[in-house]
Length: 514
Image 1 (cartoon, rainbow, N blue to C red):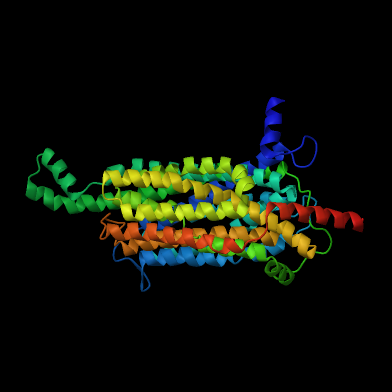
Image 2: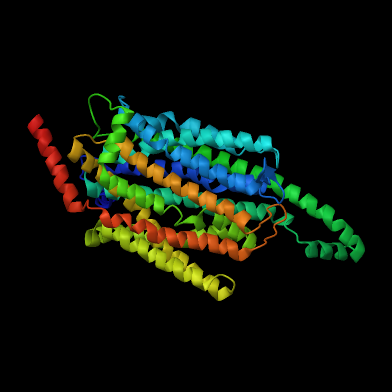
């Protein structure tokens, strides 16, 4: 009983009335599984292509385009294309009418297709440096993106169907975002440690090989002649090993994630959904442009697409090629976690004290200041790395707030839209959140892979031509993005008080109609 009471207090729910803790927990469990899938593809497909399939090696071209640049363009183009599919999927959700509701069915229907396409992205039989392999992965990745969207949009829309209480919904989303962060963190931290440990034996420098040969009684000339052969073997073995590591990791995370989708479907309930004739896509787009508060959130999200670029592939390249330890990428991402957890716990207090709007603005301006300090401090000395580590911990604050706040604010805009037009449009509204997420992933992957070319990194030999260029790309892009994303929110007017007044007016209208 004590546990149940504690859960009701955590979510702000009422025993026996409305949404219950069991549903909120099931919703969060699905978020963990969803982020297993999203992160293994979003964070490691680029590395799989550049380092395991060696498209990032010097001299590799896809047509007339440098291999690393081609991968960057693929990541950007696919994600942007898929992001603009989200309004279409949102409209489909709003047209959905089933005995299970409009959002829940997609958790059931799409789990297996998502799992299959995720595994296909990492097939270890793709040939390194092959244009055919590049084309096949590109096609599979586009299909994966579309299939993932079919589940992603209704998953986030489901929160508004479960409850129309902004406080309860905000608490549910806070826990769900923490769960999503946990899922993403397990993948982000775990995979680099595995790849670094299992490929370390292939990462000998020429000097190290010469010493090994000397210890075995081979003279300097003999060692020099042998180095080329050994290095070639190491490169090939390293790439082949990486293929299988990423493939096995993908299979494991898919197998674990699939039941989580079904668990979320089975243990949630939709209470607030539109009834009557389903709206057309064109009608939904018109609704979207009537929701000016939502459009401000979308603009802010797009401008903030690069704020956390160091947690994407760019950070992994920095750890692997500049710090010479791929496993440190896990440390980089872990450093953000404490700040994120603190922010998540403080969100209810901060929104009550400052409102969602000003909490969002203040915390992102703070993030911009932190990255400015990191940029001028640099990374080329131990004490500087300590300062940057502290900066990463502090950057967890805006990341944690943003992960929760945007979902809660979009939930409020659903109520705003219903108050203004009489239609809720959960699908089209939360399609904008997934659009923001995908733009961020697109920008993060693009900048990360482009940094390979800009810093003149050869992923086959591990050589780096310009380490400072990689640092500048990662930090400056995030710095600018933090400041830029705060600007549109100065024009956002939907306060907590106003949201409650709108919900009360909506309920009053419904009472009159009945």
